[in-house]
Image 1 (cartoon, rainbow, N blue to C red):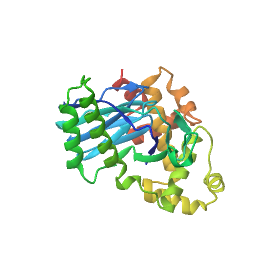
Image 2 (tube, rainbow, N blue to C red; image 1 turned 120 degrees about the vertical axis):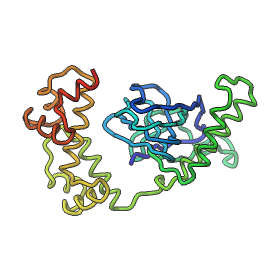
Image 3 (cartoon, rainbow, N blue to C red; image 1 turned 180 degrees about the horizontal axis):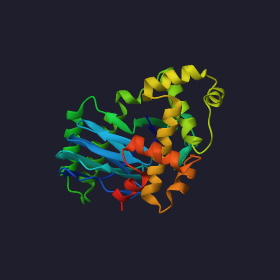
Image 4 (cartoon, rainbow, N blue to C red; image 1 turned 45 degrees about the vertical axis):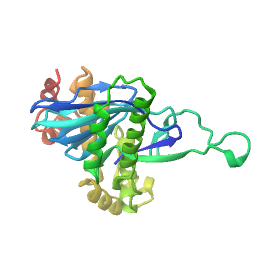
Length: 290
């Protein structure tokens, strides 16, 4: 689970909000580097979303924050009538994926010069990218209020009201159970997953993985089985396939080149693994998006 960490002040800045209804077969648009955070909250139905190699099923009462620097897309069409709210926001301060480097920096000083009693100090708030809200009714109420305010309101009082409502919503998202610190087993699984994602183009053994994390391979496998439902090598295979799907959508490279790019030594073996996991060949998958 990815956690987004925001340094405040400055507070997160509300931009716009709206309500959308999808009928079966509709899917979210594909966009790259939209330069704002896109918050989705599903009221009814389910959105099937993808961001880079990660896939999410956003059902009723769930929210998803899409990053401004990533490629996101509708993984598949809705299977039923789906209602959701969308909200765009941004920050002029620093933000990062938790335990990763800062993605954007504003003023980094945590205090102003002068008397220490008057220092302005920053702190961080964490929001999971995917959230199952403990109080979805309250979130829906806030989204409804925001969506009903005129989107082009320029009066100071109206804009101030929008910002206050959004800060209350941000507090609700940050208070979700997912934002709490992970257990040691979960941290081990996430560290292993991060290592595999960073080295997926290379040949990796369970011994090398264990030495890198300073854990016994059996313990790592047990943690990953609990958190991801698969062994480290199965996770690596799935991640390579997810990377290949992005390349099939975004490039006109040959299947052989894509196989090599994502860490497979032989194109036939890549095609066999792809077909087993996706139920279709790489070429058939590409045809879905062209």
